[in-house]
Amino acid sequence: MTPSRRPLVAIVDDDEAVRDALGLLLRLHAFDVRAFASGEEFLAWAGTQAVDCVLLDLRMSGLPGLGVQTALASRGLDYPIIVVTAHGDVATTRAALKAGAFDFIEKPFDDELLLRTIRAASEASATRRARSERDARFAQSLGRLTPREREVLDHVLAGRHNREIAALLGISPRTIEVYKARLMDKLDVDRLADLIRLALEMGLGR
Image (tube, rainbow, N blue to C red; front, side, top):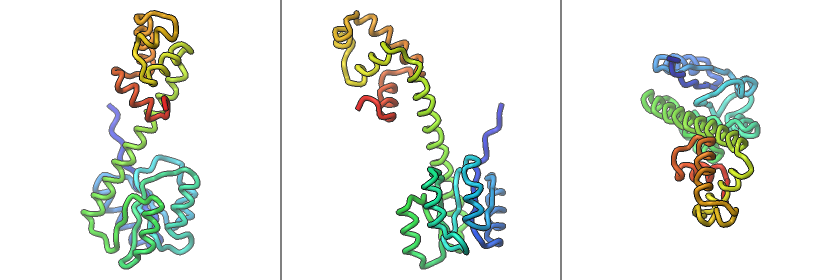
């Protein structure tokens, strides 16, 4: 059996002591860590592998935390970001949260609060990644439907029953059942309700 993947946390802070302390704490609690001394260094690496959480210092020499957030967003990298801020840095923290940061932690750190927040961010990241992978599989499976199966699917998503669909397509209700069973098998769903929910989440049938 393949061992489960350890969550990867990127630490972006220009204070070496902070990077070292955070790295030690996280490794002791079963996280993998990559540490970066500047926003520029992190951005040069970002996108090369899946990241479950980013600890991002807001005030750094060179590119500040908000600039890193903006650069990540422009590249479509929606990592869960926990911004690290000093006491009283309220305005900048609000701006970071408004720009999509997951949460913020004040210096000096409370280890338990920090670990809880990182775990929550990592879980959100795993959920989003699983949803993205599911959507990609669903979109690929849609391409395997025959024109008639896709036609039946569109009628199902429009809320029509078998007899209505059969009358519109000039075939029997039993044949509609066969088409529905085939398309559900291709889309790897067991229940009609799951099919409709997934299709609506993908923007179909609207």
